[in-house]
Image (cartoon, rainbow, N blue to C red; front, side, top):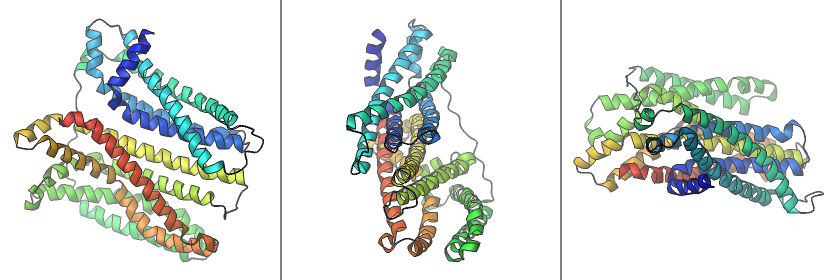
Length: 437
């Protein structure tokens, strides 16, 4: 009972630290709940029932483990003080695990409620077959979601427990910031040429898909992924190299306002930024493809499968889209919060140089906004050039009632992105506020 009281008190006091944890857990559990509801109503069995929830649970386990590590670092000095005051490691571990499980269970309740509401909004307009009451469906789907929730929390708790047992007081009291050496590769112009050529190949493949006869369409479809991946990587190699070169040339313009600070922040980890942004851009493109495919599957005019299979496949694709977006924004947000903590001392230097707290907060928020959006730049280029071409092809295949459906769905996707972007930027701003004061 004492652990429960202490956990509730600590959870309330450290709620800001748990914002990302709560968001990721609630959204992903809601997606598991939706998929379970569709499986129950559609009377699907076997691998179909567990495939999507199991995939989400596996991704959620990795993501929650990453967030748990972040929270442990946030509370490191507090835990060190507990140990110095005589609290044993076992008691400290039980206290922290109880706190995490308590918040996780609240996320489970919220996630199942949200997931069931989403399912009801989309599908309750159709008959529920032999289900007499909505409560029976809710109870059964909650039980299945609880199984996956327990699996996720068990794996994460075991990992977190092992990490806590290995930590020493000295490690908790002194955390080292890992800095990367910045080197100018000097060949960003070559990467620009590679990007231009590969992007032309991508456009050529898309044109082949649109204009070639169906017999020859298979060839550009099979190879388009290769120039696409190379062009994404080459673009970020060129972009970061160009920014770093501009910074090194000491142009007068770069010293105006806060351009130098933001440019230095973006290019500070030049060694790995291109690779990281490439991965996030691919993640973003995957989410876009999943969203468009899922929404097309849910269109009543497209009768490729029976109703239950169509609902299952369409919703599965949309769930995968949301999972990718949660991964994208959660990990990028964590990186911004960690950077805000590491740069807390430099804020004092900026105050000495005459900047107010309000100006520093605005500067940090601008930096976070740019870094959250930077992986989207190449994805936006791909969508702007490819979607109009593919939309023309879809218009020739689909019924007249679905004309320009690809353009409409792309607009809906960007509205969702805007919502996620504003929401996570608000979380970063709220969690990073303590480091700018």
